[in-house]
Image (cartoon, rainbow, N blue to C red; front, side):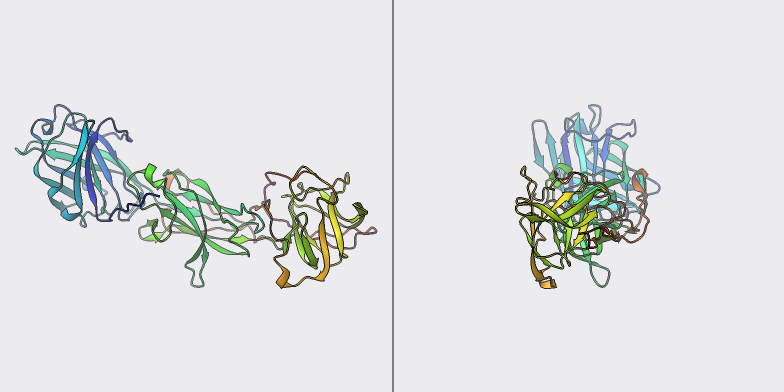
Amino acid sequence: MTTVRRSAFMITVVLVSALVGGIAFGGSAAALNSDTAAPYPHSPGTSATDFPVSVVAQGSDAITQDGMKSMTVDFGASGSFDGSVENVSVGSVSVTVASSSGQRTVDPANVSTSDGQITLTFQQPVSVSADDRIIANVANVTTPTSDGSYSVGVSTTTPSGTTDGPVTDDYRIESASLSFANQSASQFSVNQSVNVSGVVPNAGYVGIFTVADNGSRGQLVGSSQPIVALYNERNYTVNLNGNVNESQQLMAVAYYETSGSSQSERLNGTFDPNEDAVVTNNGQPANATGYVTTVDADGRVQSGSEYDQGARLYFDQGDASTGYQLRAVENGSPGRTANQFETAANGSATIDTSDLQQGQYVVTRIDDGSVVSLDNDSTTSAQDDSITITGQQFTESTAAAGSSGDNGSANASGGASTNAGNGGDAGGNSSGNASGNDSGNGSGSSSSGPGFGIAVAVVALLGAALLATRRGR
């Protein structure tokens, strides 16, 4: 992660060669060529940590002949600008002149502000060559309070008072928004994750937190990979790293990376909620809450594991809506049937072991009697893929038995999501709210024939997708 963190009060004016790439915006046909402008963060009513505004000098400009004595950046060029530049001061300004042959830093002697514009005055004229790109990076501009497109004007003046420009660059203000639908996240999966949708128009992250008793964000339980700054609504998958062990409300929060001066540098960052900043829309955090349901089971069915009698076991190695049976291992082969069950649409079920006798058991398919692999290897047999019921009575103190696993499946359940913050309609598509009922578990029933005396609850996670990878038979 980039370790240099820039002061919130810094304004950097950089003159770099026109060969340096940028995002081009249209502007005036007057002297100076318009180039780019983009606040960071892009959200409304916030203090920008960076606000680069650039123009390109032409060979006919006066400053290429006599030098640049001052530069004016007019954020009020848009009549709808209702932000502020009043926090800009001379102590937060530096100037760097760069070209294809090198660069140097020149500090301005004075910075003045008035009616949405700042004027930088230099102690000595700054030499500027044709095709040099002039960037004013302003850190403490308060952005406009509404989403939309705005313009900023730029002009330069020589020591004799000749002015080039103004020309205008366009920029965009975009609210961040998140939608967090109720869903499930298996605590038995090393890939435990949740899905969040929305607009995050900055290089940053989506952090997932527990919710404190007072409704504020609590402990961090997961975060997304660095996000490329875009204005459209997207889906974000956030790994919870197995940190959520029980059903609860969680909060998704949008953050922006506070280190680095370019998107490429910020995308090399690592999320730190103590260093990075929450994205706000006019002072309101961009966040959303959703209820995350974990699996109602005491452990996951896994080859070689032991479970006490009465434990509820989570089986997720099956195919969708398929019949299975739990059979005792007798003389090294599948023997009598202890119970049978059917998986839900996501290929999972829960097995109640209350009536199982002490001994080894394997899971087989009803249709062909084949043994289900419980250890994800190439060998499938009654001995290799069996579990053991100890005969001891299950208690809460033994709930961790057999809970480890590497192939749990988290699937979305129905439920209404909650948005917080303003301006959720940015980027062309507003993030909609999912609707539905609280997630729950459906129950399977035992068969009435001999040997099927145990009721098996089938996990019916609403809206679940099929498991991406199924265990072999």
